[in-house]
Image 1 (cartoon, rainbow, N blue to C red):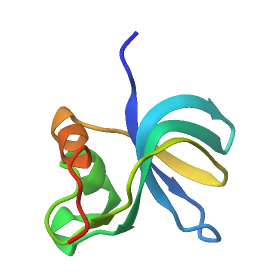
Image 2 (image 1 turned 180 degrees about the vertical axis):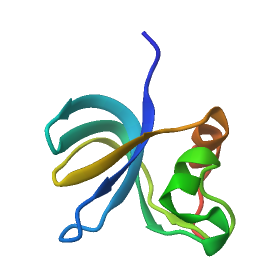
Image 3 (image 1 turned 90 degrees about the vertical axis):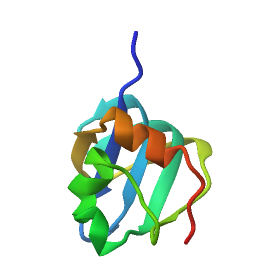
Image 4 (image 1 turned 60 degrees about the horizontal axis):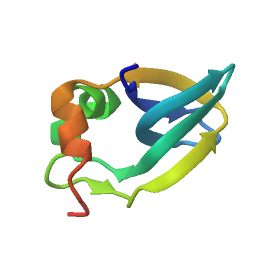
Length: 94
């Protein structure tokens, strides 16, 4: 089974943007493996959809990865392009 790599966003209370392998999606809770958080992204990325389409670029701040996270208050789950997955794999804290 192919891994489903996604970017997720959370509600206005939590205000998080995460990337990782989708393990489970149940209502507004998502479990991700090998998860990273977008702490800041450059306007050149063109928003959260850009993070899923092309991935983080120079000027973005992306956390180190962790083995697993459960995120509550999820508002969107976006499939990532191959280009974005590759970009998310790079260490980036510019």
